[in-house]
Length: 194
Length: 93
Image 1 (cartoon, rainbow over the protein chains, first blue to last red):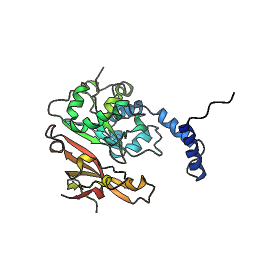
Image 2 (image 1 turned 135 degrees about the horizontal axis):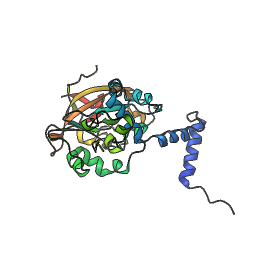
Image 3 (image 1 turned 30 degrees about the vertical axis):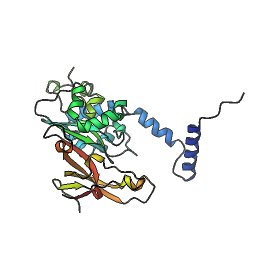
Image 4 (image 1 turned 90 degrees about the vertical axis):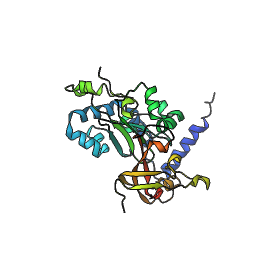
């Protein structure tokens, strides 16, 4: 019995990769290596960066000045990744990240974006009604806080550096990183001390 | 000439998508609207050319801030939206 025919999409991909390789644009194993890098990335990386920034002023300065260098300093491979911009929340200022045009997301330090980040509903409402979106997430900002939405439209990828909750002063890096969830790193939630 | 932070700009009220195939990184909702340069983010090959495999000239990319109202007819005064925009979409306010 002969094996079933390859699905058309798989066949097309194989032919596309062969055409790129023939032009010297693709090395053997390059696609697999890139998939492996993205598979290894997770919000744990971004959380560790935030926790370190909370306890190390020098690292915080590096993170805000050059997100890519700060990620590489944590051992993250940034080759081929877009520049990483880091948005520092401050007393009275909260950032919320969205990509209204598609689904730009700092994959190198957060991994794959969650489904909701890519939905038309989130992308449309985050810019038009950010406070309504935050309320639906159960996120309550301190009175008088300005909301700054960052629409990720071009070459940068953006991550939020939230404010450290005062209750967590003195905590170790691992415990601090534990309260910095994926949602916190995009700005739909705040870190909650537990 | 690089625009300084605080410079007021208007986003071109241009709709290339009505003229044919294109790849535009400037959202519809800011076309023709007033904003303020927050900072120069660097220089990058123009994605409008990259998307079609054309030679892509390097263009300045800015973070531009837009006040939430009146950009949308709802929202809270004091809130704003930061958007990455290329220099060729910005004109003097």
